[in-house]
Amino acid sequence: MAIVLQKGQRIDLTKGNPSLEQLVVGLGWDPIDQKRGGLLGGLFSGGGTDMDIDASVIMLRDDYFTRNEDLIYFGNLTSKCGGVKHTGDNLTGDGDGDDEQVIVQLSRIPQDINRLIFVVNIYDCVKRKQDFGQVENAYIRVLNNQNQQELLKFNLSDNYQGLTSLTVAEIYRHGNEWKFAAIGSGSKDAGLTQMLQHYA
View 1: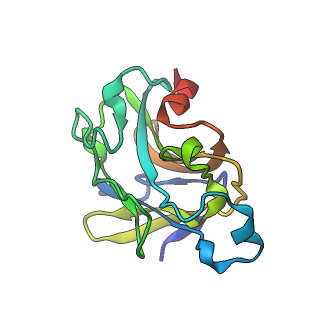
View 2: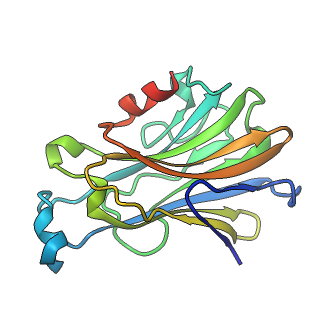
View 3: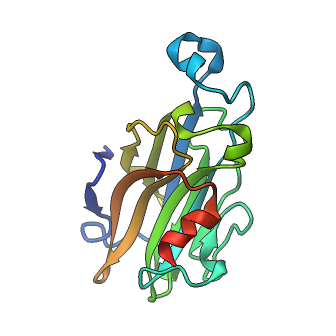
């Protein structure tokens, strides 16, 4: 059974499971149904416009983002090393299960990459007047890609109203092992360019 993490918690991925080699990182969310009305329906000005949320991975070298090729997103689906592969963009968030997935092959991550930061942002959020207060059931989970066993899940349950970007979690090196940290922090960054400035 998967371990359910709370915000701020960390967990070993490989220490107790040395054969763990390939991960599937799934991210999911649901736009709040504007037709439900009530307080929530009346607060949001996004109207009936589809909400396009994008998941991305920022690969850090010694805690810094130094190369454009180390940003994995809908415009650059595979890292140069082949260790991080985004499976593609979901434009609406409709449907059950993961909305976007990233496959991570740990052995292919270069030694100078020490952190993989998983972020999500709302495409064209300013023009569309959308923020993460209009999203529910957001989560990140990690599966063992060899047997599809769900290892952990982190539900993002904070109030993110007014925030347009989220740093969801990170997978990072700790000595020779890999760990996962549940972050769940939001910001008003309007897209990836602004988010990357935090790691420059």
